[in-house]
Length: 115
Image (cartoon, rainbow, N blue to C red; front, side, top):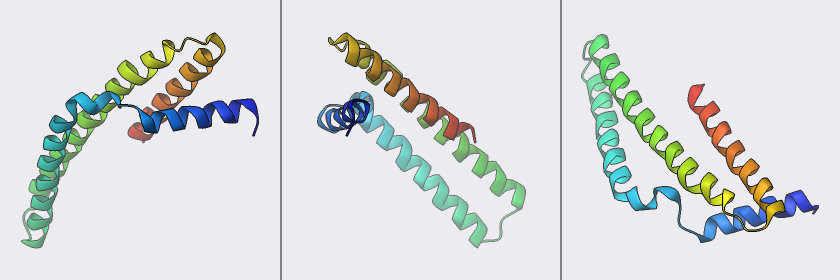
C-alpha cells in the first residue's frame, strides 16, 4: 500500500471509531425517516387502491422533498463536523489530505443527490 492509500485507509478506520456529525441529531433524523417510511407505505396503499395518479404523484413529490431535506441536513452535518474536523488535524501533511478527502466525499454525495 502506498502513502495516499494508507492515509485514506487510516481515515476510514478513524471514521468508524468516532462520533459522526449527525449523532447529536440522530433521534430527529430517525423520526423524520420513520415519517417518510409511513408516507411511502401510504403511497403503496394508494396504488393498491387504484387512487388517482395525480394524487399519488403529489404524495411522491412530498416524500421526495422530505428525503431531500434529510439529505441536505446530512450534507450540512458532514461539512460542519467532518470537513471542519479534518481542518483541525494537527499534522499539516495529513491535514491537507484529510480535508481534500472529506471535501471530495461531500462533493460526490452532492453529485449523487443531483442525479
